[in-house]
Image (tube, rainbow, N blue to C red; front, side, top):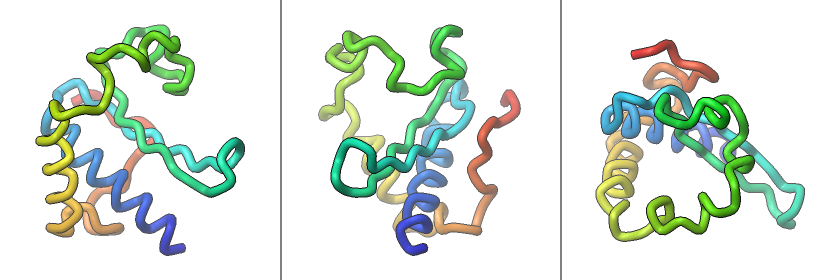
Length: 110
């Protein structure tokens, strides 16, 4: 249960930070997998209204391979501020499980 509480806390931090940073934020997708890697792990994906219509309601892994190798989408120093905001949200307890609206599968338009 601690693992799931940690996933929930991080997902809520992603929702809090990403919705404040981008008016196009719509929801958080949480995937807990263990099929390919020999350990349980989670992917937490913010999803946005500005995603292409063909992709917006599909799993992110269906984006073409070229998307993931494009430097514009790769993790780097340009994300330092985002990482700092997520860490602060977790430290400040803004994203502790049960302290705010739970992540919904679909958020209404903002």
